[in-house]
Length: 277
Image 1 (cartoon, rainbow, N blue to C red):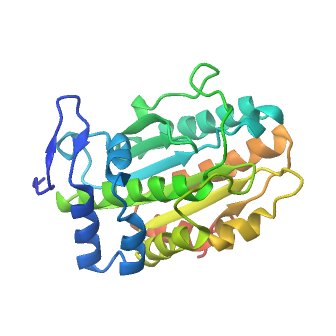
Image 2: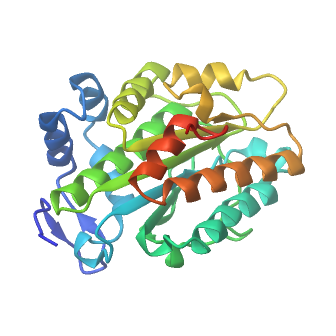
């Protein structure tokens, strides 16, 4: 494996890269449009993205990888609705499914809560931290658009870092919320859409979203306005069984997407429904 990544790495193993340089490389290659690049060109965005980059490219053992990325809602409404434990269980269910897959050695995963706290940066699936009552206590707001920009910027930066060292990456990302945006100060839905549109066009990214019914939010409309394709939207009712089922559906798609190029393409085309032949 060649080592062509830009920047250096800290002693703790986390990447310390020039994030805007990675975005510039993506724009130069045509995988990031000027519109999406403008959304990501924010002074302090690089520092927040650094928190999620995690494992050094030199420590990646596989010749190609799949990045599985989570953004669980940690707003107070999750706790108020009694769904904190089922969200923890759902995340852990996905980890277990990926750990049981034959491709587990090629999977890197990262979890950043919706309000910006990083539970764990990109790491091998075997080292991912399980969500517990101690590390997940939803009691904050819903800055959905701002934090989705941070999360997807992290996915793009890690993908670009890996590609720069000759390690192709495909990605599967899950956004989870039980309410519409409240509290974003920088980004709007159209900004997220510019990024998602580029990611989908690159054909190596899946961006999925789950909206847990709160009785008022039209989640399909919210996610569509963010550029997320209808086939990658889940809208479970406010019921633990339905939420667990939705996590199971996502886990099955993530496992299928990790099985190689052709399987990723079929899964991406099929969405949460039946994969295309």
